[in-house]
Length: 156
Image 1 (cartoon, rainbow, N blue to C red):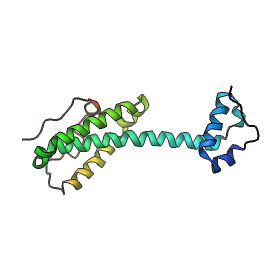
Image 2: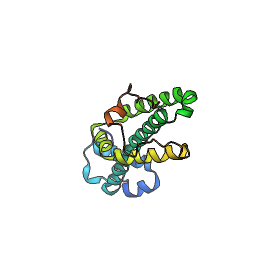
Image 3: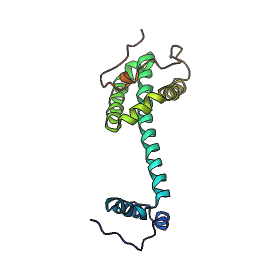
Image 4: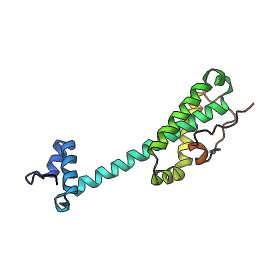
């Protein structure tokens, strides 16, 4: 069992050295010294971790949507950029697959409309509003967005 320094005040340590606070907290958890935990800061850190994970997967999904929209609707730039867009889509999907858990998958299902709206806003800005045919509602299912081989049909 790891040795715990009983003289350490975890609340003070958190303010001084967050990394050392984390190491000491892990030691306390492993040794089941739960009464010595700094619960207030531990809860805050766990909530922050959850928010970071959600933000990361939402950002990756937004990137996938942005590039799918560009690939499908921006015909003027498609010839010179489609290979790049496809490579980006693949990269973002791979990263998302590595980070996705059941809980985060459910989060993306719940937030898909909002994430799509953000992606759509980006594409409108990037294309200076020149694409008339962009769907206002997400035309992709979450399964399609996560599918490594899915690409939408281009408009002709």
